[in-house]
Amino acid sequence: MEMTDYLKPEQSGYEFLKSLYYLIKNARIYRDDNELMNRCVARFRSALDILTEGDELNIHLWRGRFHVQGERLRYRRDSAAVIDALGEYLSQRGIGHILFTEGASHEEAIAFARLLHDSVTSDDPPGMLEQAFVEKGLSWVRVFATLNEEPSGAGSKYHTQGEGRYEKARNIYINAVEVVKEVAAKASQGVAGIRKARRLAQNIVDLVREDTSLMLGLATIKDYDDYTYAHSVNVALLATCLGNYIQMPDMSLEHLTVCGLLHDLGKVGVSKKILNKQGELSSGEWDEMKAHPLIGVRKILRLNAPQKLRSKIILGPFEHHLNPDLSGYPQTVFMSKVSLIGKILRIADVYEALTSHRGYRPRAFAPDEALRKMWGERGKSFDPVLMKCFVQMMGIYPIGSIVELTDGGFALVMDYPDDTRKNAPLLLRLEDKGDKGFIRGDTLKLTDQSANVGIVRGIRTQALGVQSAEYFLHDK
Image 1: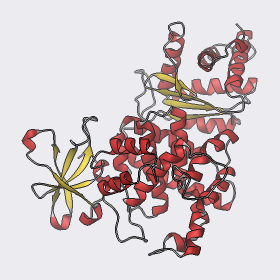
Image 2: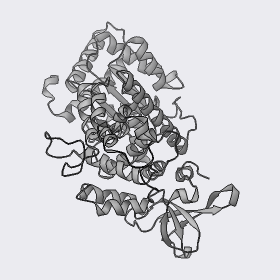
Image 3: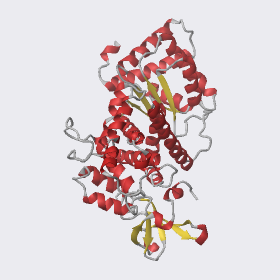
Image 4: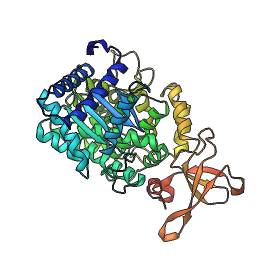
């Protein structure tokens, strides 16, 4: 059968994965000029060209199953042995995601296969491959490490170096702030790349799938040195959690995360005096502030990224201050509705802003206060269906909230163990040690009748001088 007979995307995905498997298998055995090797390379290049025509090809390995272009491949008995073997091969090298673009030559395809084979001897195969691809000029392929799964296969030399989920989350947050800073700085000077942001977005998506509660807790960080960048990261986390909650496809979820990270990129063009002003803005200052979505669009258009990718991440940042009826800003005449990503960013952006200290209002809202306020504006300011999903995901007292208990104590909302009961959170008592502040106490389940305690109200974390995220980043 000729490659052109594989018309369905799923069929093309299977054909590509099989061509990749046979390429790397035979590259270990045969010389470059071997006839069988030539046929394997031709098959691989043909399959790659079909799937990357004018776009990128994303191969994601998640919990032993392959996703091609964001869609999970169904199990097929006739391909299972080859597909499983390829999954095992990549897992042994700690590779969870490969990004291809078109343009691989015959020699480059062979070099790629041989480098994949040799990488198993490295302590960090993905890192070794990234460096080797640059040295060999293989700009059409990139690899990303598996974030949340231990590699299968007892002989694997790739390890996560003991990094637990709390440390991963902390490192991803810090890295995310630095990436947003870097993109903003480079964008203000000229053309910025998006490579790090995309890798980071995939890591965030993986962690959200693995532990949404932890990521929602992480999004409560408020006292970071530069709020503007931390705000973008928090919005990205909240938006990704909501996108995951409504079961967005893999690739759309990654684009949503990138949009969250870059949604305020246009503030690079706004005066620091205005951004940091205490009190209300004048009409002229407000006009300058309202220009930041358009400034962001211009900067995204100049990103060093494929045109199709730019087209997928440009609408959300443009729309994140637009209401469902297109009121808000910037005013536009060429749109008839707000995109799904724009609607999600709108909700995440407003919630994060309401629960943070801002110079134009006397205090931040407690998380439950913010939800009630936003719920009252559903339909007008927020898509009502998405707003309902957001409230369901967050719970009556959102994860990361500080609550006052009926016995006079305080507790932190850590999780909702039963997703169907959003009135029964898992609580962590906060014990007041005076000058030492609050420390971790016992955990309480409101479903446990022996707890004999209830919630009186939610309170602002600033009132206790507590940083909620700290309690999510330490398991004891």
